[in-house]
Image 1 (cartoon, rainbow, N blue to C red):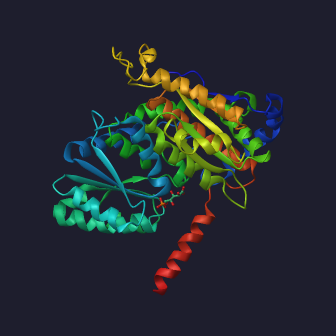
Image 2 (image 1 turned 90 degrees about the horizontal axis):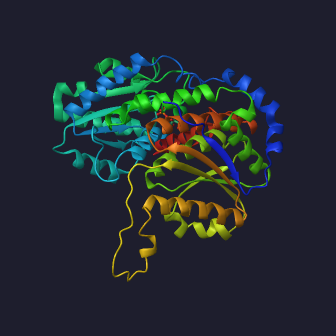
Image 3 (image 1 turned 90 degrees about the vertical axis):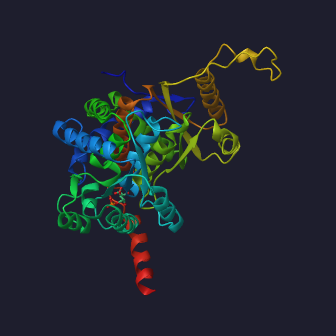
Length: 424
Ligand code: PA5
């Protein structure tokens, strides 16, 4: 399948195409030097032949679906946000996907209440565990794995090791040592791909395959994006255009970017995007603050601020033309609520019109709007969009002259926490 190109458009915004295109040579330079950074293996990986890897992920996922009611994924940051994003965007709102089982996440916080409740929730359910950590030593997942490992051994005895799958670095880290010693099955996180750029590796692909998502369609979308967005010419590369637009808006004094969409299933996708851009760009006292809104829900809360408050934000609106599932507004003879005038319309049509209205109103309120349009909300186009954002993010961070692939600020928190824990 080929999709129409993802379209990036500006709605009522002062940026002009000719000014955007002035970045042509700068973008070209960055495009050429980008692969020289460490951790850029994700740029070409969707184009490479991944057949064997996808087959082995499918095999393990089928086994998990056949033998378990729940997969417990242990991970934090880039080691869980992508999987949860795709799973939530594509699964039914109520209940599970037809071919999937429940996937729950732990090790993403240090709440005692959360992990205690999870353990009782797992009672009487058949469980598999997938622990994901590239460094193998991050505190949140390491603590959760300690608990889950003992829990699995208690429940399954020697068989526990068959139900624990480890996704980690090929050779480094404590988790790798534990996995080798215990004989757990392992998937490798390529050493040249960092956490928040790793959703299209086993980090994201195993959990989402277990949830019933078609990982081959995701990868096909990502492949198309990787091919199209390998174009160095700004005029023909929408990921780079988006990067330049947000960079120019930042230069004009907008300090917050709001990623907005009109499907509640995209809430967790927003969280993935927020981490990607926040952790890649927020450095050296620079960077747009990435925030997210889900409309129309948030129009009745933060919508007031966007329309009328401090003029510090612009909006990036995700627009999928086709959404699966819809309902026509029913005709009611009583018409006591006065809504019969809508009865020839469907909810999705009304949602689309409210989207247009919101973009126009926000633009009138002085909020620039960048619209990213895709034909359909499905596996293929999400795969495309994920790659699109990763490529745009890398370009955008380089335009700011910061390294898109490190996270020194996160290390600072870890150091302080460890000092305090050891003191006490
Ligand atoms: O993007 C990143 O590199 C981070 O968000 C990491 O994914 C996160 O800190 C988890 O690290 P690890 O997978 O090493 O446990």
